[in-house]
Structure formats: structure tokens, C-alpha cells
Image (cartoon, rainbow over all chains, first blue to last red; front, side, top):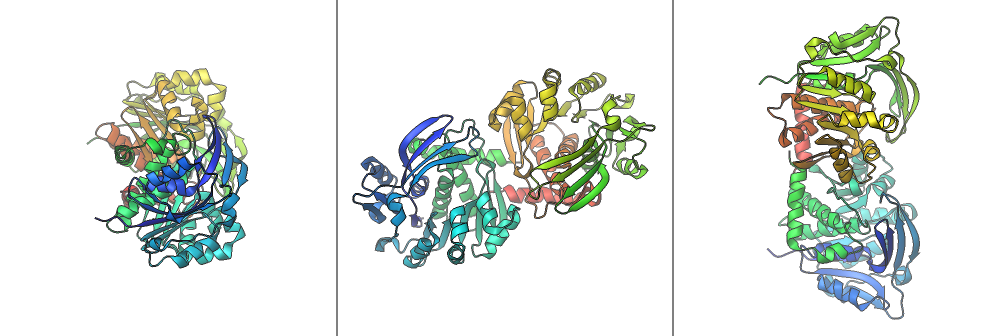
Amino acid sequence: MANLELCVVGSVALDSVETVRGKRDEVLGGSASFICTAASFFVPRTRLVAIVGDDLPRGHLDYLASRGADMSGLEVVKGGRTFRWAGRYAPDFITRESLNTELGVFAGFQPRLPDSYRSADLLFLGNIDPVLQLDVLEQIRKPKLVALDTMNYWISRKPAELAKVLARVDAVLLNDEEARQLSGESNLQRAARVIHAMGPTIVVIKRGEHGALLVHPHGVFAAPAYPIDEVCDPTGAGDTFAGGFMGSLACAATIDDDSLRRAMIHGSSLASYCVEDFSLDRLRVLEQPDVERRFGEFRELMRF
Amino acid sequence: MANLELCVVGSVALDSVETVRGKRDEVLGGSASFICTAASFFVPRTRLVAIVGDDLPRGHLDYLASRGADMSGLEVVKGGRTFRWAGRYAPDFITRESLNTELGVFAGFQPRLPDSYRSADLLFLGNIDPVLQLDVLEQIRKPKLVALDTMNYWISRKPAELAKVLARVDAVLLNDEEARQLSGESNLQRAARVIHAMGPTIVVIKRGEHGALLVHPHGVFAAPAYPIDEVCDPTGAGDTFAGGFMGSLACAATIDDDSLRRAMIHGSSLASYCVEDFSLDRLRVLEQPDVERRFGEFRELMRF
């Protein structure tokens, strides 16, 4: 069976991260980097749409290409500075402090889809200005499924624009805090229903160490987080979940309750590996049998 | 198949509770009340060990008896005052403020097991002074399984005594905060292993709205919380979980990985109903088919 074509709009960044396990400076980060890497375990190619400066080490571009990222939609700005983020996690990994955010060329991001991208079947709109997300929707032809990520910043700053995008997407992936803020409901079950009424039929609420919840008209599915002995760095776990989720759907014969549930477990599996090392380090050395093994471990974890 | 005999040591109390859904004054509460009620969906009789004052309305005693509680181990102190607790929950139900705690006769609780209790197969040591828990252990003959609950107060005030009890029990049920405090580990997977090394082979970590985790030498099982639309009052949910868990085990042919997993889902099912109304109000009107239906709903919630 041919895979569906996956197109991802997001960020490619340089992250500086400090946790109780150590410190890394200017390592590869950004939502699109994690999403493409996770999706690469399911699909041979991801149509990448992002922007970087020419200060991004060549090795990072080579790495993304090695993961099947189609680089024709990656804008490299001459003399531009790549998006940089620095943060420090509390010892319990639950809270984090942003030490520095330099948008660089990301501030002027105007996503342009190459012609070859416009027929993609699955579109993932990473967490960017909803105005730009709408603009990308205008450029894509007739996708089978559009999924969206967003964050508290856009929920409070651009509610009207976000509402417009939400009305046009099939799926939304957000964390519990964002789901509560977007819906005005503290109960997640009710929050999902309010968000559902805004447009997306598929609502995925990511809860970090507490797993993830899928709510759609034909079912509710609760995936636990895989119990990890030693978390090293949670950066990118949510994006890795999204990449595994979208990649898994791209391999599915049909997008239905069963394939959505499997996609949730694939996303959770990849995310559980992601946090075991800094940046993309664990995913870089992860092999296909590891992904299948963790899928089986989830069956064992949830069997009764 | 004959049920195993279940003996429960705990509190019977009068609770005054305030949540965003309303307020109740001096309703039936206490760990043993919730445990006996939940267990009654699985076993015809629970050997109850508790203490109350003669101010406890007769109707509450009749209710417990109607739930199969063997009252011969219930001490009613003439002129004594029943344990009272008053608390107020935050609108998100996550934090609560204790407004009043009057131990009353509970302060002088010296659990005495009637002779007929000493041959019980399953013993649940509710959250009381570990010195008294040890004393109960001396009174029971040869139980197949002893489970223990405790709280932060005993973990910090009587660590040596608690260690002595832990070394002699098979299972411990505690919430995530208590597991972290007892083990000194913030990671729950590692916390469970540390607690395991203290004695209990079976460690159950209750995580409220995030479900519950079972860790024992032959497996790890993650049960989600059932997504409840409208929480009314979380008081007693953990004890209800414990009652469902113990009751389910009392019906099992053998206590093994499979029956422990089913017990986790039975505990979670009962707890999910408990929070839907104040005090024991939801459990009072709950029927056997409701319990079986929720068990099936958990299958659907976790199926992939």
C-alpha cells in the first residue's frame, strides 16, 4: 500500500537546554525537526515547510534530509539568524523556565508551499501564527486530513484568527493546559467537546507524563505515558508524539477509530523514547524494531 | 467459587464537604465506609474494624450493615464523639483545604479483631497509625494477602514503625505524592521499585484524575481514570478504589497478574462513580449492571 503524502509546517531551531541530567548548547530543535524525525519511522518522505538562517550548521540540514525531509520547502535566509530557544527544566521535569527566545528569521516566516507539496494528503500545521496557518490552508489542494497544533500565546492573542483555522481543520493536538484555555473548561472531557464544536472532529489532548486522550465522535481513547525510569530532556516530546501520530496515520489504510488509536500509541511510543536523551539524540539511534517493541510494551502495559 | 473473606480496618466518619457543586454537612464518610461499600459489589460480607461514638446516626450503621459490613468489630463508644472532617475543594478539584479535623474517639482507636475475623484471607489496613497496623497484623492468623494504605503524616512522623509494617505486607496502595515522599524518588517508576524493596511485592500508585499504576515483579499496568464529565465530590475516591480492588481480588480464583489488573479496573470503575455525587450517594444507588457496564467501557477506553 502506498503511503499518504505528509506535509509539515513548523520550526527548525537551535535549542540550549539544561536539566538535572546535564546541559546542551545549540542542538537541533524546533517542532518540524522532531515531527519529521518521528514520522520517518513510518513514511519515506515528509514535505517540510520551515525557515532557517544560513548560520544553521550544514550537518543539521543533512540530518533532516537523511530523515526523508523534502528540503525544497525549507527557506534558508542568507545572513539570517536561525530561531534560538534556551530553557531550564525543574528537577521534576514538570515546569520549565524559558531563558531566551530569539525568533530570528522565524519572525518573518511566510510559509510557501512548493508546487509538489500542494497535493499532500495529510497536512500538519505546527504551532505558528494562525494567520499563517490559514495562509497554508489556501495553498494546499484537497488534503484528506489537516491537523493543527497551537499554544497559549495564540489562544490569547489571536482568538478570532485561530477560530477561523479551527473551523477548517479535522484534528487538533494540544496539551491539557492549552485545551483548558481554548475551551474555558477545566474538565478535559468537556473541554474536548467544546473544541469539537469549534470545528475539529478529532481532538487529541497531550498530558505529558500522564499520557494522551483522543476524543472523536466515535470514541474516547486514553493512552498512558510509557513509564520511563530516567527522563533526560522532555523538549520536543509533544512534537515527537505529533510526528509519530501523523506518520502512523499516513500508513493507515483508512483514517478511522482503529487507526487513530494505533496512531496515538505510535505517537506515545516515539515520545517515550524522545525524552530518554537530549534533543534528537535518542531518536537518531532508534531503530525500527525498537518502535515495534515499544508498541508491544504498550499492549502489555494496557492489557486486562 | 467461594469468595475469600475480606477484613478492613479503617475509619467511619462524618464529613462536611464543600465543592463548586454544593455543600453537605455531616454526611457518612471515613475510609472504611467507602471501602465496605465498594467491596459490597463483589463480596457478600466485609469484616469491619472501626470505632465511632454513639452520636453517629443509627441510619449510618444500618446502611453499613446493609452493605454486608460485619458490625461485630465496630466499637461504639458511649458518650463518645465520632471522627469529623470538614473540607473545601478548589474549583478544579485538584487541591483541597481541610477546614476542620476532630479525631474524637478515633484518637483512642485500639483495633480489636473479633475471633471470627482472625481467619480472614484478605486484610486491608486502612490509613491509621502504623503502630496500630502492626498490632492488627499480630491479631490476624494467616492471610493470603495484606494490603496497606498510609499517608504523608505517618511517612514523616513514624518512618521506623511504618517500615516495620511495610516489611510485612504484600501490597501497598498510596497516591503519587505519598509514593514520592515515601521513596524519595520523583519518578514514579523508580519510586515503585524503592517501595518494592521495602517489602510489598505489589505497589499501586493512585493518581486521581490521571488513573492508577500497578507495579509488581511480573508486570506494570497503567489504568486511566474514566473521563468524567461532571465531578461533584472527590472525597473517598481513593478508598472506593481500594474497596473495589480488594473486593475484586476476593472474587478471583488466584491472585496473579491477570486478577490484579482486573482489580485495578474494578477499583477505577467504582471510583469513577464515587466522584459523581457527594459522599456515598452515587454508590448507594449504583447497581451491579452499572459496575459491569463501566468495566466494559474501560475496555473500550483502552482498546487498540
